[in-house]
Amino acid sequence: MQKSFFSTLMALLLSMQFSMAQSYVVSGIEKTDKEGMQYEVLGKIANHYWVFKKNGANATIAQYNDQMQLVKQNDLSFLPASMSSIEFVAYPKKVIALFQYQINSTVYAAFAELNSEGQLVGEPRIIDTVEKIRPGSAAKVFNLLISEDHQKISLFTVNTTQASAIKVKVISLNSNFENINEASISINSNNKKSSLSDFALDNNGDLLCLRNTKQEGSAPAVSLLYLSANGAEVIESQIINNTLLLDDIRLKIDNKLGHVILNSFYATSKKGNVEGLYSYVWDLGTKMELATTANRFTDAIKAAVSSKRNLKDAFDEFYFDKIITQSDGSFVVVAEAASSYSNRTPFSRWDYFWGGPFYNPFMFNYWNRPFGFYPWTRFGFGFGMSPWSFGWGAWMNPFASFGYPSITYKANKVALIAMDVKGNVTGIKTIDKVQSDENVDEFIGYGTIDNTNGTSFVYYKKQSGIRQLVLNTLTKEGTLAKGSSIILQEKRYEWMPRMLKQVGENEAILPYQYKDKIGFAKIKINN
Image (cartoon, rainbow, N blue to C red; front, side, top):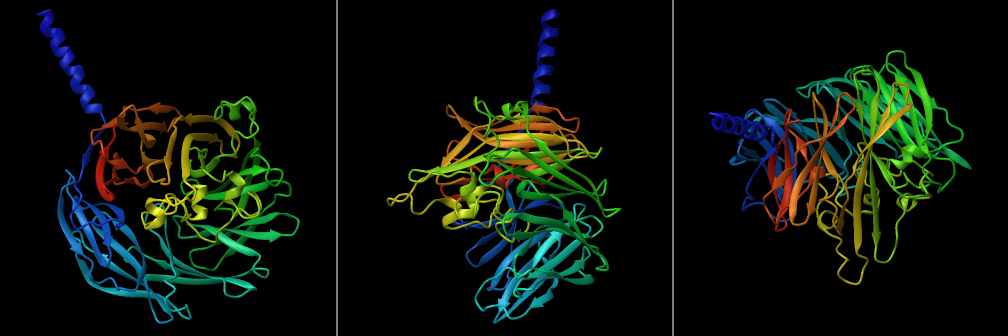
């Protein structure tokens, strides 16, 4: 009887452990998928997982079932041959495809609706056009912004052809991509000394971005620009800072509290060490600054991310990734240690910026960080954060085997810096990972899954012949918990954690590479 009881108890414990385990299901690689295939995971629409694929001139939507078996593939024959870019807005039962193409000197922005079966609804419709674009330039003129709740959509253009002014045009759209409002503003560019970056859209449809203006003999002047959804109100708030050299400012909207949060590492001298974290909080309701704080890192904070005796450069290899907001107004700044070096030339933080690391926080006048947060992508090396990075930059350094430098990429420790509602540092936690690769960087870094329990960080680890996905979860209460790893059985697959796309509360699609071709897996976590 006692033996039977213990046997039953053991079986129950094992079944509980199995039910709590993480899991994954791998798709096959289709014969029609070629090397260098462009792709984007769109999400779960109706009952299938959608992946956009472009093999040469052939564009399709692949639909997978729960077991990641291909059940349907729809050709997108309506896309023009001269298409220069495509973006998707996924809803539970439909997908909107926004694409741009050029005819002669005119660039068109058009959209098409796909129903839950992946079939075209009606005909594609043109939203807007821009004239006098150099023929054959394949320029991406129109930029898409979507609010956090997916209810507000904006399409905007930025015209910098005039030395005296930057012209921004914003078209507000509803979920059916119908035009509900247009607004234009002209910003004095001071003879092209000003640039714009980090555009974002709040849940009310208001547009926000950063303006950076070069100044002779001092750090650039930075301000926050606000354009109301109806275009009637334009506000510029100066970020007063006369001493700190800000590096790579990031903008985050806290829609629940109606706050705009700016964060930046800072130094006090050109090519100096990172000394602290600058935070600026702006209220969307009052249109006023709430707090501005410069947090100088203590030795205790630096010691959390470095084991060196000299902690002076502890944060010099850390770069911002994202900001996680909490319900009480506090937030967590996520930064990862990233570096690269070649067999000929060592790189340092300031090598990734023109004119020194803190000379100009906006190296490229783009929004949504198209190069990702990894610094080496500014040289054109590495995979970046976009599946549209293909060709030489996506898979290899083409010069590495011909007497040219071989480049090693590293992505190591992740710092989770806790901040209170006024932008003061209250603590730090770390995810202690070590990753590196030669001439490619798509297999390092991490992805995240957000749900009601918190944010789960997923990274790929190879050690002693074991391949696994390691999970760490930052809970809503601020604790960092390590979950059970997913042991990967496939020996010759290489996994791409930065390309992970969340498709459900606890589910994500994770691309992998096998023999230079791309496949996909569905992972499920229990945190």
